[in-house]
Image (cartoon, rainbow, N blue to C red; front, side, top):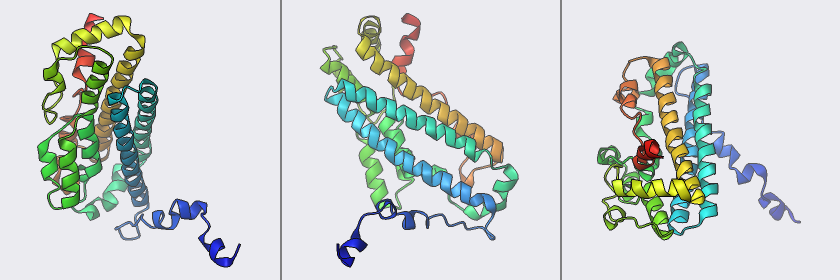
Length: 267
């Protein structure tokens, strides 16, 4: 092997772009403050996991709509494991005290997790759609276009309904053709079918329960996020002028798949 080929050989560092990756943690505080590095890394890792979970949700939708049951369950299980990791990262962030955060918080200026385009994309795929969240990204045409596209796409639950239809469950046309930009709602006729599934179709019931696990896992992440913010800044406004914990509380206990919760008392 000549020197040129040796220099071009793929290595662990070159494959993972480690030089670039490890140069991206750039604190803005003077010193810098010790905990700012942790704060940056945690949020960068969150963004990487958001990218991966969106990737997996796209796969899930594809598998649901093509009725690939084994891939549906394995993909859902992977997504659930990622959600557990997202929750666990809050434990690490909570090792930073309010006093530590205050040492560099003012230097964040208008930067806020509220501005995460990937989290909005994640929410849209899940079904929590809000056109106002698209408008927040008008200054970035590429991101704005991506979010607008996601806003008009079918959600995970819409793909799930097509999965049920592919398995010969008579999902009403009005449900399959619903306006996918609207928030999740309950469909009594779908609930009747789900009760039938739970009582006599174990394979499809497993998919339903994994979706409930996903819904519950996301709500757990939201709750832990709220408590972390309260623990760190109390009732203060968030960075970038957001309402902080007060806003985050409004996102709690909103099910993505209300039909799957509504049937519990009838099983």
